[in-house]
Image 1 (cartoon, rainbow, N blue to C red):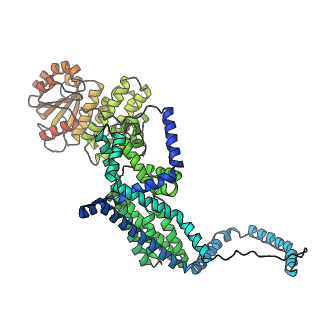
Image 2 (cartoon, helix red, strand yellow):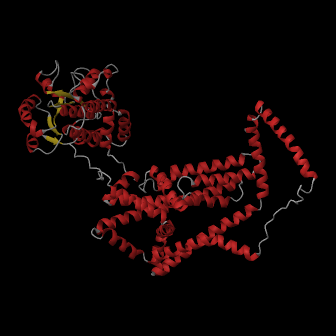
Image 3 (cartoon, rainbow, N blue to C red):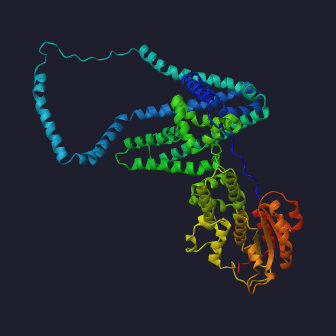
Length: 627
């Protein structure tokens, strides 16, 4: 009926000692070579960030050198402007530090009185008071001796050591030495970035030649994939962070927090640090609010503003802009932040998402690194049918039902059976054929599948409370069990005997367990379309129609077979009698597997999926309520 589910990415079956050694060597190089690797990596990431600007300028000036230098000048001006804003705001804030310190001290005393003060009351407080009085009494003679005698017993005079005042030359030298390190690293990053931009195309060709010269198509696809993902990530994150900074700036100005521009700039910059950056920015602004306002209202308003802006940006804006376009799972982002911050410190924390994204892209295009895509990517590790089978083995039907309800909000029950349920049964059949599934697991799978189908059935197909007490473990066929459950709820003939002409669809199974299940699923699918479908076996046909029934009520007869090549002899035997009995009906064959030419010749219509069967029935019947 449906093709086999796509095979998951091939993963190494075992880890060799050589692989562990190689991994340890790579980690060692990353850790001990961070002084060299960090500036180069940072320069390459920045080059990807301003590469779109370089391409736009190149269309105007027609010179790669001029476009690169112009982009670097723009970047330098922006960075310098942000630095000037931060420095000016910090200098202005430093002038009010004495007043802020006093306010903070008063609030700390108030908090201490409310918390520790109450705890220290009672017997504990009195005991501490007695101990303090005894300590003061014991130290009083010593203090009196020291206060009354300017000299010690040996005649020594107490001396206070004060540091020598530095000369202007020493102050400048100390300042220069403190900024030389960061300035030198920034210069190295800038120079490397310029050369990376100048040699962008040549470097790309060299990497392609080095990593995949034998397969240019695959390597080019990997580079393009990485470039597109990184570009979307950088542009989207930059846009979101700038928007958040502007919103914070306007909000802080409205509530009256001083130096609102400083906190807005810090918020926009710190949001590049995954997860913790926004909390650092909110905490800093909250500390400022606590230092400015003698009360607590400004602090609460500031924290509320950050919470509201972050909630809107993370839950509404970011999913609309790029969602999961980076291809990383949320857990992998957290783990990557911990790993890269351990390897490279704060710069590693800042670069953790882009670096991990490159690893995921490599895992999607390099067979030996496929485990990286499975561990770090947001692509499901198991297909929906594989998850169904895995949960069925575990007996977790609640999770299967929850996932099925989410799927059925978008797709039909027929498509669910075609794409998920039947492939899961194929996986179970393969394990059963290889004898890798135990009898207990087989019984668990049967029971779970039955409970899932019962939960997803229409109102007319749902079993009664009494019938639900039965267990499918005692049944030889899931289809027979499900049919019995439905007959308990709807009656022996699965509906009224006297029906309007051309209103019934008979679904006939040939007797195998798979045929019974497929036939019962087909009945339930047709009933979701308000078609009076009924499940019959060959034994039911031999017993004849129920008293009072008329054959003109049947408009379609579905003949279900899981193995047409093996069961065709039986179909050929019963088909003439069925055509004679239901002369006005259309005979439709539902083949669960493969092609079979005799079926196409002998039957009016042949379908190979539930969706096709439902479409044929919908075209035949009018949408009238089931009698």
